[in-house]
Length: 264
Figure (spheres, rainbow, N blue to C red):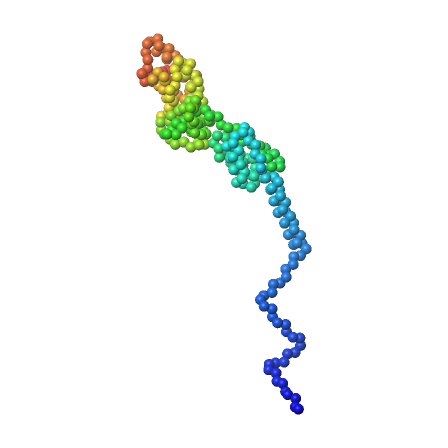
């Protein structure tokens, strides 16, 4: 029997067989060297340490002196809004104090002490309400510096000045000079010594002139740049003279010129 001849199609292959191509792309293996691995571990350790310190030194206890719930809530709000201020390690007293005084117009000054690891002591000095101020339909409290520090409360016992110009006033605004506040409070204390009491204080075009309506119906016109004692002394002399002559002013006594008085 003759051997069958087998024909092969295609070209014969020589050498080693070619392995089949893998499906999809292969990714090269990535290995870090010794130094990069150490740097990576160092960075991870540093992050862990920072997070740990933030947690340990995060300010959680706030003591306000004198105790004031409103101030404590404002301080907590400021600390919560800034991670640097909220941590005892990075806390900045000057920045915190400026933010707190800007937030609360009744605060005059702030001092802080860090109580490590997680406490803060805040000592606050409040402004001193010294004068009431009416402008338009709004009443405000002014401190000794003439700054608006809050709303004029009902039943207020302080002298109240009415601004006839009705200029708007906002909290924290410097409304009048400290000298004006001192003058009005001085008049309110010394006027009863003359036998008169004030029923109304008001200004018209300028704070240099103060109009005081008395319980006798007439007004006193005073110069706020003069010493209170000098004008009260002139007023006493005028009242004594009027009493001796049996006269009573119908409208006003003007005491703005030293050593002289005009009445009508």
